[in-house]
Length: 493
Image (cartoon, rainbow, N blue to C red; front, side):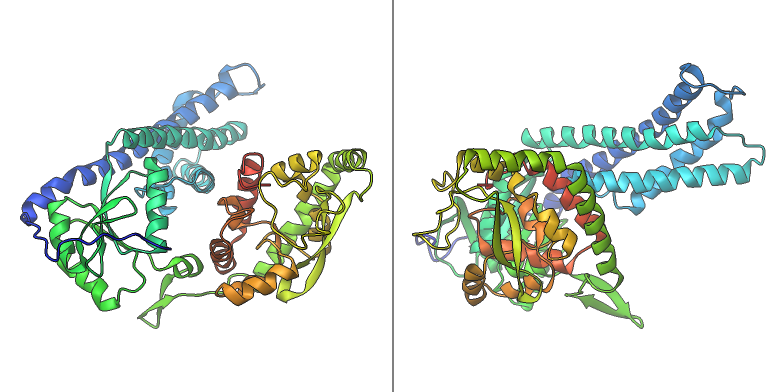
């Protein structure tokens, strides 16, 4: 990426304030994190209490359900107290009290579901052990479990929405110093600017070589050796190292300059390193061990993934058959000269071609003169119905057949045509590694906005991250996100 540079003076002095002043200036951020955790705890306590009271009302006071024996509310005080203790512990075990910048509501829902399920089961089991005559209504416990999930999620939604609104007003915002330049720096800064609810405010940039006074709309405050004094002078909360060319020793030197300051240091390697490496820590007979690549889709995981594919694709073809028939009729009526389905060769698992099925959305002679080309916004080759089908992704539904027969998976790297695969494997690092798994109807790149005429490098990075970090929950999460973004994806054309 070309960057316009303007010369800056050879030397610049940055006065440094003392450590005590810097730490005092950063206390508001630490207090904000404490307030966030406290708000979440209060919300969860309130959710648990409201759930038990609402469950009791529904079961015994609403008149909606018959019962042989009336249970006084005092008989459930024990389970209420147990729930107040156990629920926060299970939520904490799922890391749901960590101060986070970007909230994934699907991850929150999954974590709350598992936490509430474990907490309810433990509360009932422990209650029965502590009080042998503990008599509970199974229907009420069922209500209690379901309402705990609903109220806990709702309470946290209120907390995080309020936090986002406060950050938009500049409250609880962390001041960020970016170390480095290039594509990764620009990508990080775009995220910070486009998502102010994350609560980051970029103060300036530090470069490796003196020269420019401004990059990406931010002032260049100094060089790498100035980081320590810049952190104190500008009351920095987070240092983001986004330069892949910095050596290990230079990163350690930056940490040494910051010293005892209460500042987060985060390292962003280059795009492919950060997106395709699932770094985990472990131990080998007591020795610390870092895993930088672990193939997730193997063994029993492949069986799980295939089970999910067959179950959902078979059910989808049955349940959606009226819709599929209706679309097929409309395609034929609005464009009678061409076939209903487009059967196109795509590259799948291990680089082997397969026939991918779609509803036809373009004129029959769409590529007679141009040959294989990318579809563009307002592409004149599309039929009127085809434009709608592509915008809503309904043209992809026949690929459920590909999934059922095993050519594709519900989730995986999107398959490309052989013409484009040959181009990309020559220019994009590690591109062909995405073909080590089955191609998918949807994928991690697609639900993150990388569809259509977007960067193939970024798409490849997201695809490789998915392959190396697969879990059954990740597939379910991607499928749920697909249903949410299918009708509002600006890159679907």
